[in-house]
Amino acid sequence: MSTKQNVWEMTLERLDSTMSVLDLKPGVIKYLREPRRILEVSLPVKMDSGDIDIFKGYRVQHNTNRGPAKGGIRYHQDVTLDEIKALAMLMTWKCSLVNIPFGGAKGGIIVDPLKISKRELENLTRRYTYELLPFIGPEKDIPAPDVGTNAQIMAWIMDTYSIAKGYMVPGVVTGKPITLGGSQGREEATSRGAVYTLLSALKVLEIDASNLTVTVQGFGNVGSNAAKIMYDLGFKIIALSDVSGAILNRNGIDPYKLSDYMKDSTLAEYPEAEKADPGKFFETKCDIIVPAALENQITAKNAAHIKAKIIAEGANAPTTPDADPILKDNNIFVIPDILCNSGGVTVSYFEWVQGNDAYFWSKRKVNLQLRDIMEKAFYEVYEFSNKRKLGMRSAALALAVARVAEAMKIRGIYP
Ligand code: GLU
Image: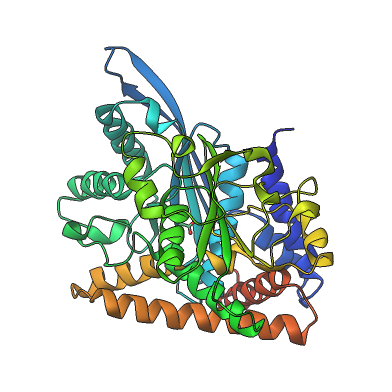
């Protein structure tokens, strides 16, 4: 069984264990475990060689009880349907937890976007959008960026959808370029939201925020922006990693300088830090760990070696269920993914609202509203976890699932 198949099973396992906290009927539980719709498509693309290649794509809408389906599209060579199902379900819980009026969805294409040309990437994206036409729309299902996709890809999706409709439909995707109706602050929203939850955690744990050391796994959109925002706030970024390897400098790494350096080299080659072992990345002694890469990174194998005080889950599903009790025994405070990284979809919601109103907010307004939502969600989860003697992850999941179950019950089953 591949690791990715496990992600779906692990997501269900977590859901099942949370159900015991909630007083839900077996039928409701059965209902919440199932995705509402799954679309699988084969995407022919005329490659630069002149030949045709076929790519596999998916879109899963897990739940739409609280509003249109919402969630990113992932381009990665290891995408599987099980992974997309798990991530779609996590989007349902995430939107519910921050109380924005969306359900959950996720899409993905099995492709390494760095291994095809820009023209091939555009053709692949447009063909995928064509196949999605009956399923997506501002009131139905609204895609956004995820691992391996970006604002340019959202612009192609918006353009393809709009041409098919005969008029411009900016609300069909979020994470668009600002020129096309994107929101200020969306690019770094996931990271900024994660940092807001981290600052709240430091407050409740009464940890002095000065001189704290941080390690960040992943230097894509979430990891690099989180490192920069924390660096600006005075945290010391001592270790970073990405697919090229890991680096360490106990005196601190400037993530802005590193980003500049990476324009024509790799993270692992960065001369102002020493090379580190990516396999032992989480063993680095530090105060805060931000996993901001893929799933299944903190496991029963490495969890016991973690010495941090806080793990802020910028990635989706970075921790496996068997690692949870180990982290708990070692008194490590976990800000779970559906809480920690929900800033991205929150600003996606702002983008959708701004697009619907055709009235655009300042960056200051976006960030203030984001902070309000993130802090409110954090304190709700924290208080519920204290009240019910639950870990932060179970508390977050229970609150989120309860809201979805409530919406479903009130709407009823029809026909
Ligand atoms: N892909 C992001 C996530 O996993 C954002 C989704 C969105 O904005 O719809 O939360």
